[in-house]
Image 1: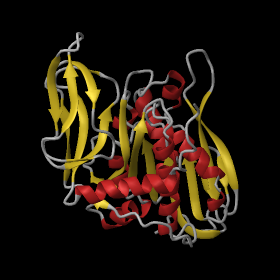
Image 2: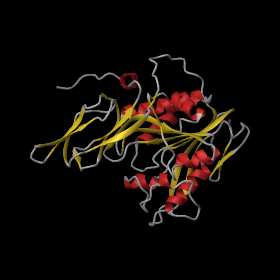
Image 3: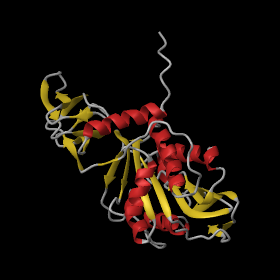
Length: 347
């Protein structure tokens, strides 16, 4: 499976990394118009023993910050000290967006609709080309880390081409209960990687511009689980509580029937039945305008966070499973496994 035999040298930018070496690389990118130099930070850890080459990327959307913390905790983890193969971790791809606290690049393009990019294209195309050529094309597998958009939260979930048997096994190994068989979008990193033979998972969890501890811990553990599955790390000896994985039949957004102020009733991970009230909408005087109801039995995997909505706006994302109650139980079990019990409140 591995593209790079143990004796091969990997070169990123103009930096060579030999087996057994760990290096931090600054991959040069177009400067700011103030003549300030810019670079993509890259962490490369190579084992002395052969194995797959895997990339982990974060902040392709510059306001999606959970992934930066996930990468930071991953590379500091003792679990990866005796790795087989190669880990290439990129905490920030869209550095411009991180600086501006923005999903987009300065040219207002979405980097995740610009792959594989072009050396002579737009700023987005050039950055996509740089990242794809220097990082993705040298890997066998990858995990791209995302969050919900601004003012939206996602339950930890894997989106991937689950019709690909290798990808399906990776998705199951990651270890979160909710798996979505997601179509490839034009210009996305997943599409470009798939066309180049790179197997990829997309991890969605949390919201933009916020750290979420549950999402971060699930992400770190999921990457390590996937590395164990690929033979890059030894199998874990800890047994713990087993988390089952469930593939959603489909999913859809529930949209606001009226414009107004929202009182949210359902939360991420909730099991909802057909007709259950998800939220209530009122006017500025508090008068009732309407109710959002679940169109079918399912699990809440995404939601709007602010109490404002326009008619037709997506407010809740519901995934549909054959056993939604069991899915919700395993979401709760995962949370119990990863988060310490609360120490009580201060009066």
